[in-house]
Image (cartoon, rainbow, N blue to C red):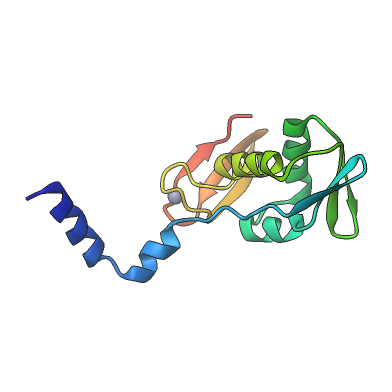
Length: 133
Ligand SMILES: [Zn+2]
């Protein structure tokens, strides 16, 4: 059997819904700068999508961007000017590392701490993997 044929058979045997659900779409960061500060408008909704704690996510974000952050209303305020693309890159990095299962790449995971080590437990496939910080 040709490879292409195998692929098309594989895909046609899968229900279409599963196929679209399987690809996790990175949430798009909405940000703008005002004076010397950068605001992330939709941080809360991103957190909701990826089901992560604000404090832990902010810690990683500020570390990667080497800046400080505060919360104003429901927006994250970063000290300094940052382009959307740069923040997006860090958010993507965060999601790859702390959200997506390393086995099945699904976002249905829990971030746990075991003996001081962060562990990602996947609810979809049951895999656990330690997160290297
Ligand atoms: Zn998994």
